[in-house]
Image 1 (cartoon, rainbow, N blue to C red):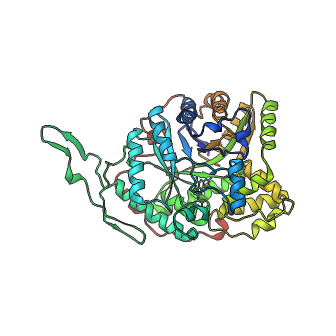
Image 2 (image 1 turned 120 degrees about the vertical axis):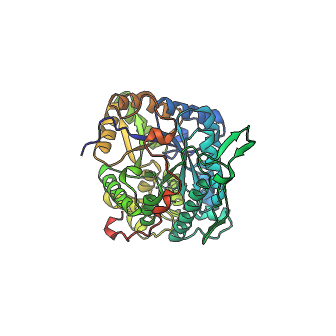
Image 3 (image 1 turned 90 degrees about the vertical axis):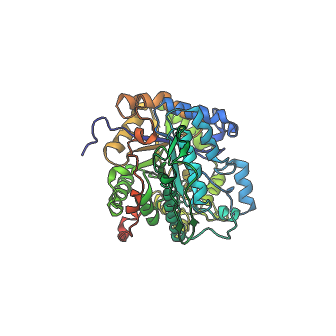
Length: 469
Ligand SMILES: Cc1cc2nc3c(=O)[nH]c(=O)nc-3n(C[C@H](O)[C@H](O)[C@H](O)COP(=O)(O)O)c2cc1C
């Protein structure tokens, strides 16, 4: 079945608030300006350029520890600016962007393992109000022991315990947002009433992890609740996404794998009383676009040169929570990866093992591929070539849109907007103007009624093992 006429791509772009980028070493590119990562104008330039390009939202990942399993790898991560080596709080960055943009959605990552639901509900509701209904919460459970060490734990929680806590966390946050009826705030000067107390309710949540009385101390968000994003890919992660998420950000190296993931995710929604259109699947894609193919290929070659195998190994070790620094770069990667069971990103580890097996990669080669973003799709070429690829994925239901990535900023984002977006607009895949007021209106997600999410609190049937990556 072809996509309906006028159906647009859902389009986000992931920005790392720090020196790390979609490609390890990207900060060394002559046009990269990552040294400005502690300045508001740096982020404003990127966000305003995305808004000119009609993007739905800017997306900030987050990390709560400097990567590194031991002092040596931490030193290397710091020296080489591996992702997370320096990471300002994205919540404060998006708050600044709320005042510098009008339409762009603002996606921020908050961890259910290390935050408290009351604080998260309050911060995100505030962001939704101050931005006029443009907040997105990327719900992560985090994936690294180094993060646990910063929050008083010897180890991160096991995956099922993490997702168990995450379920209760999200329930509590959703409940808090619904403690206010939509028309509770009245500011009635004649009757001397600011808020109608009959329309503000206690939550009285008492669960395994949290006890929260409520009500929240801020009105229900303009979007009813912020758009919910998620990026887990394990069995538990997929069910969690099917229950709660409206946007899923996922690494998919090619269209066939992406189609299988898309079908799997959408098929899980009915178990939670949801329909396919309530969850948008957005694979990440690194974009290297040039005025002609030779320019694009030259850009790609330069980026790969900037990417060093030892540094890449630190990044990979951080991501899969296993110190690989003791291995030789020349060892075959597949047996090493296949022997690893992690509590963090098992889905990612499995995908890497499959790539290593298929292409018979050494550990050094795999690490460089990983650090240059190859667990994600990479589209290199002219605007027409890249738009063809994007359209193919979209038309074939491998995705509902993309989370675009650049190797360096702000000019990488500007290149996408200057070169690629006009071609996508010509094909009717990207808006020429924003028609809605809130992000939900623009991206095509309904504003939820209060309390209707409670119908999702069913226990899902187990999924056959064959459905897992
Ligand atoms: C594409 C992608 C992006 C992610 N971004 C973040 C992030 O910014 N911060 C974070 O703590 N976890 C991030 N994660 C981790 C996931 O949210 C999740 O906690 C982790 O993958 C473990 O779940 P899983 O085993 O179900 O994959 C990301 C995962 C993926 C696949």
